[in-house]
Image (cartoon, rainbow, N blue to C red; front, side):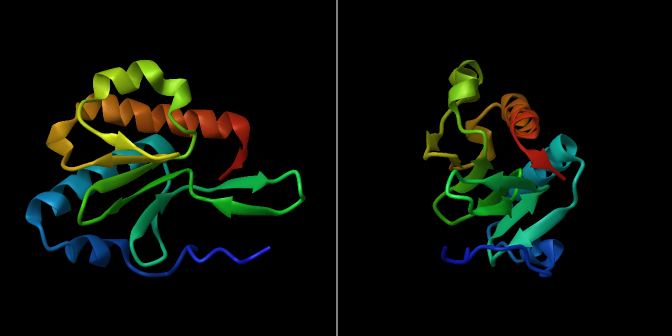
Length: 140
């Protein structure tokens, strides 16, 4: 199996966040960081050059290949704040209806700015996703 390109690094999360040019994006990223810290109880780690991740879960495919990935994380990209909801969105349909303005990918929630969504609903979504992942997988 090919090795994952995105892995935990020893890079400074604080330095990464401080380097976000747009003051509003920097403020939004710090708010999401606090939500994820509360949901996981884990310290932030950089994953690759631009993803901030929290916690770990162990996965194993039917082929026998296995690995570790973050329980949740985010990346303050230029186009949107990308939030990784690793449990996917299907279990959270009711919350998604209350969230606000967003787009999704498989496990990616794209938000232009935090003010576009209900922050309380977002925090519950993150926390519920982490709880779901802890039920499904071995986590740390």
